[in-house]
Image (cartoon, rainbow, N blue to C red; front, side):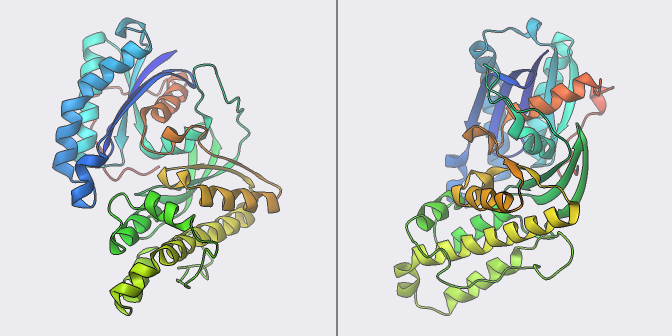
Length: 342
C-alpha cells in the first residue's frame, strides 16, 4: 500500500511517500528563516510559502521514491489542528491530486501523527517496533501539551492537556523575553547544556498540586518576566545561561511530575512521546529516568525529523485508516479544522 501524504499545518511544507510504516521518500521545506524577524509564524507569509513550494515538494518526493502517481494507492493530508490558511494549502493540493488521479483521500489529525511518529520506519523497515497496547501518549509541541490514552489503533482518549500555553510555546515565549530569537527552544537547550546546576534560580511549577492531569505554563512565563524586570540588564546578560537552564528545568520538571502522576493514575507505564519539544535531550533523559524508576518503557520518534511537523507520521496514520477503509466520502466537504481535537 503506497500512500502520498501531505502536511502544511504550520511552517513546514512536507510530503512523504509511505509503504505501510516505511518511508520511501520524505521532503520537508522549512520556513523558519522567513519567520525569524517576526518572532513567530506570520500566517500570510506561511500561506504564500506553502503555495510557492508545495508543487515542487510533491514532485521531488515522487522523484526520490522513483515513483509516479499511478503507483500511489491513496492520498492523505492533515486536516487540523494548525494554522487555517496553511492547512488550506495542503488540503487543496490533496484534493487536486485525488481528483486528477482518481485516488481515495484520507484526512488525518495532526496530533494522531505525533502519537504515531514513534512507529515510523525507514525504507528498510527499521526500527522494528511492534505495537503493545495500551500506551500513555505524551504530546509536547509548540501548540499542544497533553496526555492521551492510546488504547488501540486509532482509538484515543485525552486525559489531560494544557489550559493555556503549551510547553513549546512557553519555551519560545520565555526565549523571546531573554532575547534569544525564534525559535528559542533549541537555543535554550544549548545554553542549558553549558551549566552544571540546571536549576540555579527557582521558578514555579504550575498546577502540580491539582489532582488532575492538566497543564498550565502561562504563569511560568509571567514569573520569568517579573524576574527579569527586578534585575539589571547587566545581571540578566551575565547569568543568561543560568536563567535559561532554570526556566527550561521548570517546564520539564512540571512535565515529568505530571507524567509520573499520569502513570500512577492510569497504571500504564509504556510511554510514547511525540512533538517538537521531545527533540530536547534533557527532556528525553528525564523521561528515561522516570520510566526506569517505574519499570516501564518509553518510545521516542526514531529519527530527528520526526519530532517536528512532517508528512511521514501523517502517512503512517493514513495507512491504518486505509486498512479500516476510513476514507473521505465526499472530498468537496473536506475542510480545514484549525482547532481539531482528537
